[in-house]
Amino acid sequence: MIVNDEFVRRYLSSAPAVGRRFPALYLNENVVTEIVGVVGTVLKDGNDRQPQPEIYFVQGSPTRRIVGAVNLVMRTAGDPAVFTPAIRKAAGDIDREQMYTPVEAVRLLKEQPAAKFDETIEVHLNLGLNVRHAEEQLRGTMMLPHGTGREQRVAVFAEGDKAREAEEAGADIVGSADLAKKIEEGFTDFDVAIATPDQMGNVGRLGRVLGPRGLMPNPKTGTVTFDVAKAVKDAKAGKLEYRTDRGANVHIPIGKKSFEERALVENYAALIDEIVRAKPSAAKGRYIKKITLSSTMGPGIHVDPTRTRDIAEELADASSSSEVAATA
Image (cartoon, rainbow, N blue to C red; front, top):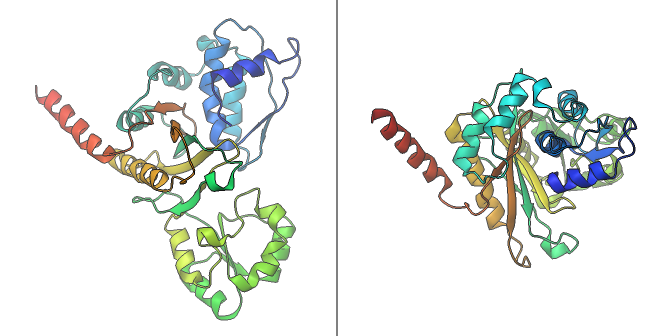
């Protein structure tokens, strides 16, 4: 789902009378942040309703800070006077109609007021794919040159020697039928699940638990393998899995706000190179339709989707121009 002005206007127009609750919004954690800026813009256009949305997450765990930000914007009907200084600054610094270069977008995010934690920087891509056709679905894995800045908890389904290999490689949780039973009872405190092929009998019945969370081991992403040591080391090093959702969108983190500007730009460039390389042969028309860069608590910044090459070089050119301007 892409949360844009059109989506919010349709949502507001379908709302019940003033004082009634809005219908539930079913969003994932990646797109909730963008609605903050959009709703504020739309409500300032004259809609005086004061909706009280019920927010649910279908992916990821609920983040109260984000929910609070969404509720604040909607309760105040977009009135900047009652926003916190951080929200006012974020809204004023970014032109929602402009397409920024990757370097400009990263700099804008870095300049936003800091939260009380190290925010994750995420890239959201809307692709020109018809994901109802199997040949146009996009899925793969990649390694970012500077990692994601997040420590991954890895669970491994293995027995015997393979279990020992996994433990020696740094796996956080290792088990077999006992681990499967634990997950069935509600345990999901891990970020990556790996299994040896002979363990798929135990893993198969966990599809309803692991599937919706994106944790189901899959041979296409290298998480069903006998080489568990390599799989664990790759996961610990920040190996990322990406895939299109039902709306042909890809959401992927590229680092933390504390990263150096160059590291974020190079991670962004590596991601775009991978998405372009993995373009399905059956894809027709415009491939990358929209790119949005955002931080956990920051607004979405629209990035020019036509800039897919020499992105890292743009950073060097921008730095040179800044140095020349400073000495002039």
